[in-house]
Image (cartoon, rainbow, N blue to C red):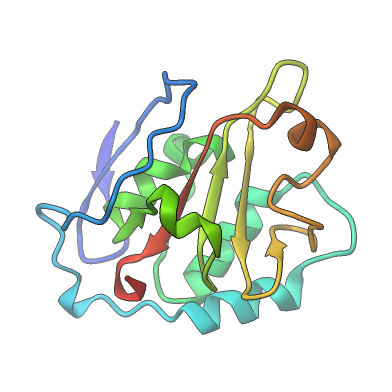
Length: 167
């Protein structure tokens, strides 16, 4: 499915995840995406997420993180490409986020976004969460990136994305 994003008319492509292993890349410029005129405010995104997060999960992680990203200046329209939290990776890359290398994951940075795949017996949507500089937050304030005992025990594949301007 192709469409145009609400940000600078960049193509938006629906992607499917077929891999169950983690590949983390070092930063490489994104061909065809000129971020020079892109205005994304990590602090505004994190402030929005912090202000709206609950003590316990509502099962709406993708919606809350998407709205936080919008508060930071990047609109990700609702649609099939972002129906499930685990599918956000390709969409984030088209908006100027890059996959973080394994060595950079030792200490997450404010605004980093983790996209976590589902696990057998868990929610098929997977999970998405943003690091606020102190903890991971989605629709609720999490104890760690894993968001719950099922994720913590199964440790499904995940990727972490960082705004290109924060490299």
